Length: 279
Image 1 (cartoon, helix red, strand yellow):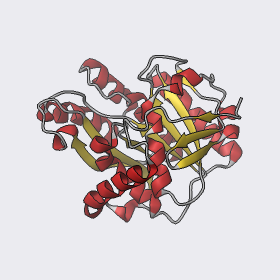
Image 2 (cartoon, one colour):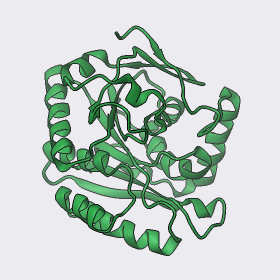
Image 3 (tube, rainbow, N blue to C red):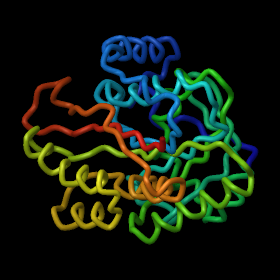
Image 4 (cartoon, rainbow, N blue to C red):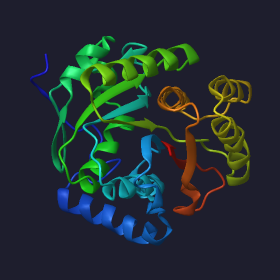
C-alpha cells in the first residue's frame, strides 16, 4: 500500500501523451484565453473550484481560467483534494486510492498519504484505474503551479446530498487536525449532447441553485429535470465544504463555453469553471 505509481490512463487521448506536445497545447489555449482571465480573485480566500474534465481540446479553454489564477497567488496550498465522478461504475460509493504517486507526461505528483489515511473512506484503486475526470486535472496543476504540492484523489459513484455532507465534513475535520492548507477541485462537466440553447437553459437551473448556496436545490433540479451534470456530487461537496469555512462564501463563474465552439455541432457538451471563495 502506498508505494506504487498510478500510471496515466488517458494520456494520448484526453491530453497529449508527449511532454512537449502537452506543454505546447496548454500554452496555446492559455494564450487564447489570457485576456479574458480575471486574476483579481487570486488573493481571495479560495476554497476550491468547479473545473471541467473533458479532453483539453474542448474544455481546457474554461479550465485554464482557474489554474492560471492559482499561479498568481502569493500563498501556497499544501494539498489539492480532487473530487471527481465515477464514470466506470467500479469501486466504492466514496473511493480513495493507495498509490504513492500519480504520473503524467510532466512527471510525478505525490499523494498526501497522511490526509488520505485519516479520511478513513474505503480504498478502491479500481475506481480510479481508468477514470479520466480526476487525472486530467494533474497536468494543468503541474503546468501552472510552480511549488511542490500533494493530491488526494477521491472518486464518487453515489452522488447524494448525504455523501456530499459526509465527505465535506470529514475533509474539514482532517484539514484541521493536520493543519493543511487545502484547495478542493470539484471535477464536473455540465449538460451533455444537447443544443447549445437547451444546455444553457438547463445549466442555468443548476447555476441558480449554486448561487443560492442550496445543496438540496442542486440535487433536486438535476434529478427532476434529468440534467446531465456528471459531477454534481463533487459540486455539492465543494459547496458544503465552503459553507463550513464561511457561511457567507461566494461563487464566481470564471468561464463558460461548450464543445460546439471548437467543432460546430447541434449536440454539445457544456463546460463551466466556478470559483468558491471567501472575502
